[in-house]
Image (cartoon, rainbow, N blue to C red):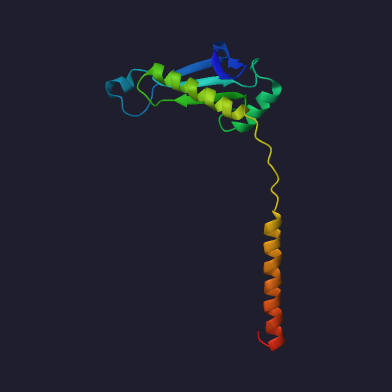
Length: 139
């Protein structure tokens, strides 16, 4: 089970792993061992997520979810397949947690009474300055 948050956990059988050769340094190992891990999770077909959660994940992670509704997380940071697999699972959990978090409703900002008074006083002052200029014939 991959623990996401509170009461939500994704069973291991809903997640698929694909291993391939990783680029970058690795010596002789790089040409022999498939250390790159691609974690695949079928968001659209997951029985663990509610339809609302599926829609939220698909919308928030649109760049990572394919047209078929499969979420893809790739990790190739280490030379170890096991470490990359663990890192991919951790990243997957973080992504789902962030995608499922409900945004806080925006609190409408209010202009304070002091700010209003300052603004109106400044307008009156500018008005007086311009009125005085006009009276003297200045431009």
